[in-house]
Amino acid sequence: MRKIDRFDKYMSFKGLNDNKVTIDLGLSVGTIGKSRKEGRDLSDRVIEQILNFYNDLDKVWLMTGEGEMLRYNSGIIGNNNKGNIYRGDINNNISISLPEKGTQKIIDPDGKVTIEDISSGVQNNLNEIDMLNQRIQYLERIVSGHEATIKSLETTIKSKDDLICILRSSLDKQD
Image (cartoon, rainbow, N blue to C red; front, side, top):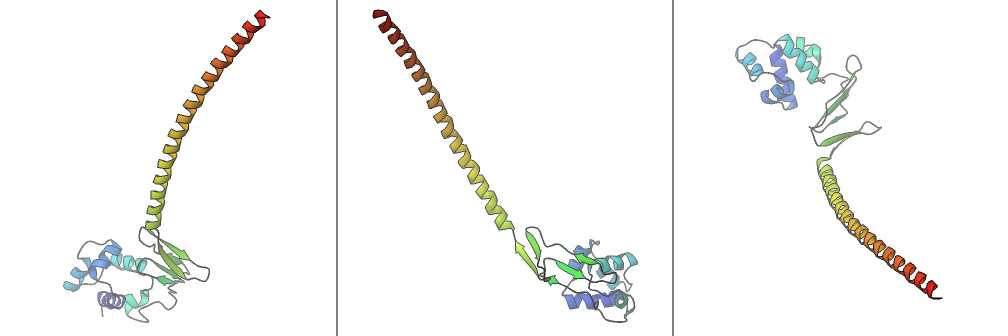
């Protein structure tokens, strides 16, 4: 059995198709189908990309057909079709694939993974910020109007104080 045949078996097990794999790996369209159709095996470069992306696929099994298809210690922590976390590969590395835009991945201390949609919350926050900015502008206009009124009243008070001083002065002169 060729590597392409074993990878086909893995794809079938994981529910993958050529288009999904092509997009995941950034391959040229038709790379996998063309290998299959022309009866040739996958290139070393494509094999490397496959193994780097699909962390639970066992390298020995893909290359030789020996052993198990899935790595025994792949330790998949979470999989919501929006991101995966794998731990404990051959070198005990941890690999994380991020969820799609607008979501966040929360990893609890017990290793449980939750993916939350934050796009609606962000939009709600942006809407609230817009409303608050509009309210601030409205209040600034009111304050500005009151400041003008206060300034006008201060001018009136000053002129009346001046008038009182003049009247007192004239009363003092009459005494």
